[in-house]
Structure formats: C-alpha cells, structure tokens
Picture 1 (spheres, one colour):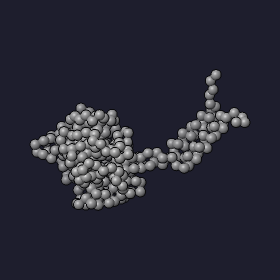
Picture 2 (cartoon, rainbow, N blue to C red; picture 1 turned 90 degrees about the vertical axis):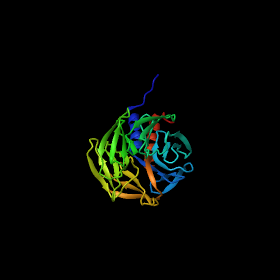
Picture 3 (cartoon, rainbow, N blue to C red; picture 1 turned 45 degrees about the vertical axis):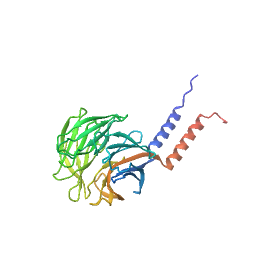
Picture 4 (tube, rainbow, N blue to C red; picture 1 turned 135 degrees about the vertical axis):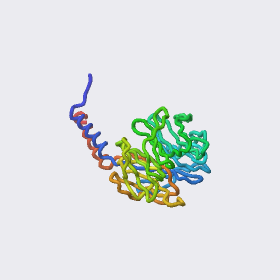
Length: 312
C-alpha cells in the first residue's frame, strides 16, 4: 500500500527550501597571484586580510589564474613555462608544460578545457593561445600575427573567447575554430589589462594610462567609462556583481592593492600591501545564517510531528 504526504507537508517542505535559499549569506574568498621569483598565491578574506595560500616552485613568476569546477586553481608561470595546479588544500603540482615560455592569461571553457595565452616578445615568432584538455594534453588553438602581445582572456556565455592586447590597444574575439577577429579598439596608449564579463554579457578591461580607468564594453561593442581613478592587472566579479581589480600600485610593485568597484562605479580599497599582484579569482559559496538554521529546523520539526502517529 502506497503512502503519500499530505498537501500541508509539501507546503512545509517548500517553506524549508525557501528558507535555505533566501536566508543565506555568501562566504567570499579571493585568490591572487603574486608575481615574484619564488611567487605565490595569496588568499584574501572578506575583511581584506591576505595570507599565503600556496607557495609555488622556486624561480616561478606566476601571472594568470583560473579555477575549475572542482575548486582547483591553476596558474600560468611566466618564467618556467609551466601551468601549475593547486588543490583546495593548497597542494601544488605540475599540470602541463608549455611548448614555449611566457604563458600569461588563463581561462576555462564550459567543457573544462584550459586556455593559455602565450606572447612571444619577439619579432620572429607569433603569439599563440594553447588549449589544454583536462588530462593535460596541450595543442595550439589560435595563432596571432607577428607583433601582437596577447594577455588576459575571458570566455563569454556563448563560448567565444576574448583576449586583450595591451600593446596594440585592442580586444580580439576567437571563435571555437580558433579564428581571430577584432572585437573593439581601445584608447591609444591604454596598456590595457584584465578582462571580465558581468552577468549581462558586458565586458570590462582596464585603461592603465594616466590615473587609470575601468572600461565597460557592451556585447555590441559600445564603450564607456565604468570607473575612474584605478588601473588594473587582473579583474573578476563576485556573486553580488561587484568588480574586484588588482593593481601593482607603484613602479616598484611593492604596494599592490585590490580595488572593489560597485555596480554604480564607486571605487574603494579592499586590500593593501600585496607585492606585484597579477590575476584574481573571486569565489563565493552560500553559507546559512543562524536564522536560516533555526527556522529550517523549526519547519522540519513541524513536518516530523505531522507525520508521527498519535502518542509517539
């Protein structure tokens, strides 16, 4: 004989689910690459305090940073030509050795493939983007003309890859077959760096000339100034659509900062004292509040009482 829950029980279950979804805060963790010989990844908490999360191989100079679906971090080692994998516990291993040195930008596609940009800094070799499968197999994805300087990258929601070229003041888009096309031209002398998409598909990058500014570019290519008074290396959005941007801070790279930029373009300093920060990953996970736990427990207790036989 089959038994079913009364409609009121389903209502209580629905209330439990609503409580779990709505009465949670977002626990935030920020990870930043520190580009120094014998570099590191630092972890910055919600209060802006930075601690070392993982030390990287000797003589390393990490720039790019990306996170996979399992919570592992990957960094591009500019000096050693390596892609290092760092587990959530901070254990470092070599994920892939690149065919040539100088990897800079990293980005994951929706299938778990990692893409690495490779500027060659040579008049005799062209920049490339390499594709690295989840098992570490490396292949050439896109070839750029001579004289380019491909840096940070980001994937749009439709799977198109975008890459910024700070030396040539442009952002390119690369389709799934590796074909390269100009997306937009940036202000002359911008030395642009960093790329990040918001939830609406707008693309952001930094104009690092003068006092610096953050540029917003719509999917149609219309450009506007989003925030002023700060440049950036890497940048990333949190779940609340605040943009976080890392900045080396001064010519000697000893006073690097993280800037927090609200959806209205208001800039504030989130963390200071970072040595030559380069790329950033922002992680937010739901964390139930004490009110959520109390209300959820009360609702479940009521459900249990309704299902218990009389006198039990």
